[in-house]
Image (cartoon, rainbow, N blue to C red; front, side):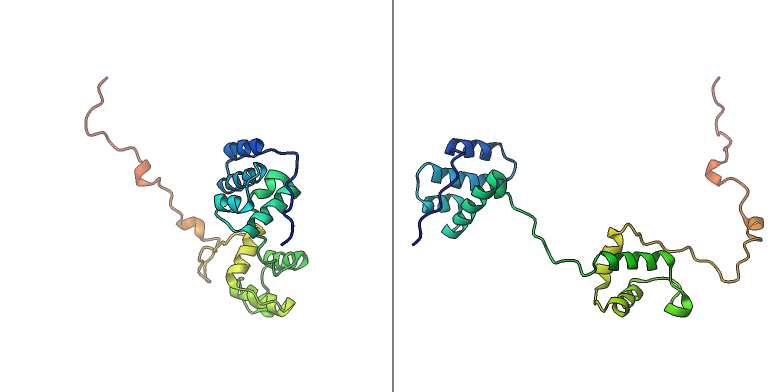
Length: 182
């Protein structure tokens, strides 16, 4: 068995208990209380019992506390998978979405996620799910907009003749049923 790793000396058990009481993160407070027991001279197995963890986890907490102080005991966000598209590829995707498809070249009149998925595969040889492409576009401030349907034989110059000119019914002034007292 190796020797126990010493805790940093710029804190006391009382300091850790105060930080645990004042903190908003329950997990950090539990870890601080477990380390306070070690400062009080108790065995590390007692600290593991207080923290409801094993001895290896207590060792990890001691290392994080020694390196980063009390802030090192706050749970960090998991890094997750790296994005499949790098910055230049995302810029190329944004440019092609902005410019829109060319029907003769791309074979579509508007971009769908499945079309962009195929374009990404042809351009970069990267296989992506349509939902991932949608999230990437949303992160680049693109929103899904559906064009209003328009008949192919619609004439824009004749539309003005067919627009409604009277106000809607709810805006018309109705005749009061009873006279208004004066």
